[in-house]
Length: 317
Image (cartoon, rainbow, N blue to C red):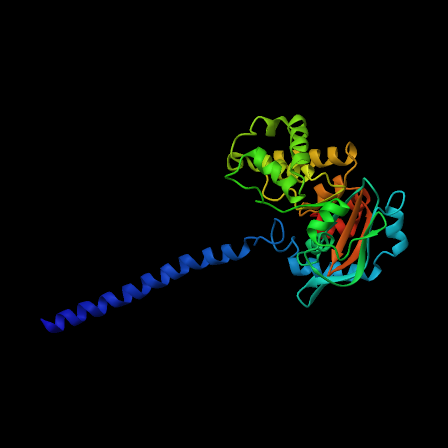
């Protein structure tokens, strides 16, 4: 009886091995098929057509060898520089991010900073507003050196307002209370009330929700509130960090229409960092491409849209 069981087991084992081989053969093509699929890279598409972030940075660095001269930056600023940054070395702690960085923008102009991650774009805004350590160089507005002023002094004395990337509203406070916070930052609450009413007159979306908690607003309405709160401070210069971040396309268009209105009708000078390079350059009078804390390319916004290097590296073609 025992002998018969052994023989039966011996007959079954080859069948298991054969089944295992068949299973392995069936699975192998699936692995090959998976290998042929494109892997998402920087933006969209497959790795055979899309450049990685590292590749973009390396190629952009090679372009930086032909960085623009100061005379070229001066020429882009209409009627002379309203705001200028001169050979600025700045960063965080002891780490230097910007290396002899210079910038020129005329009164009522707009300038968009684009470039690979870590290029120092937001550091430029932080430096203008007073959030970085400045090792050397200067920042001048209307002939006034504001390099060493604190953020509150820059707001009060030089009229510089900073619109943060996202989620800077107070969700439990009403829309009106959020607007009035802008006045308290400038220590002029009475003027803030008047400015807030002007905002409500201008933007019915906010007026209709003035007594509602800011937390119930849509993403686009929150961005509008953030911009409007900066307007209550009555600034001359708006620093705008990633205005389109996290927004649906219809709200992105709305935000850029508002910024265009502020520049063209109200005469605000706007410096922005924008991840959507096409949108930012189409909006801005001037575009700078930053690489490793330095300006690699500078030109009129619409001209940079036509620049083949900018298109290949930052515009997807």
